[in-house]
Structures are given as C-alpha cells and as structure tokens.
Image (cartoon, rainbow, N blue to C red; front, side):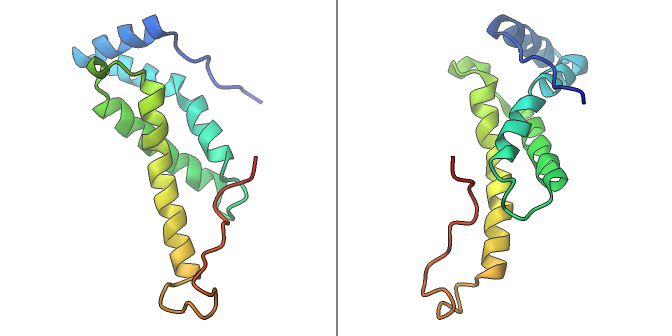
Length: 123
C-alpha cells in the first residue's frame, strides 16, 4: 500500500505558492499532491457516516483544488489551515443533504424535532 507524499515545509510551501502565482501549473499540482494526506485525514472522521469513502475523498479533493486556487498567502496563514475548511465544507454539505433527506424537518414527529448526531465519529 502506498503512502501519501510528505507534507511541504513552510519554505517549500511559500516557494510553490509563489511559482503558482507566477503561472506555474506544475507548482499547483505539487501543492495539491502534497496535501492529499490532509484530505484523507479529514475524510477519515466521516467513515461511519454510511457514505462511500471514494465519494467523500473525491469531494475532499475538489475542496483542496479550490483551496489551492483561492488561497491568499499574504494573510499570514498556511495553506493547510485554509484548505482544511475548504475540504470539510462540501463534505458537511453533503452530509446535511443526506440527513435532511433521511430526517426531513417537515416530519418532526418521527424525530421529535431532534436530528441525531450521525455525522461525526466520536474520538
């Protein structure tokens, strides 16, 4: 089983972000590849949600690509801090969609107005 590439150091991250700002698509691909471990880590939290892991990983990768495309290094944060939110947000949206589909608010008599906490795996 292959493991993910090692994460970038702060200096490497700054270098690749600068190269990407200057139009280097290879730098963008490296930023995405080196942060795939973050996607897997975030998706792992939702492995008991009943959703297909491949689907969650695909959605997480889309969020990672969005993070790389919209990240602003001038704000002083590292890309992993920003990317974590961009990865988790669409996954949570998908989870909410399926919870609402399964437990619609219009029929609160079934749940007593309470939505069960089926989204997060307890740590």
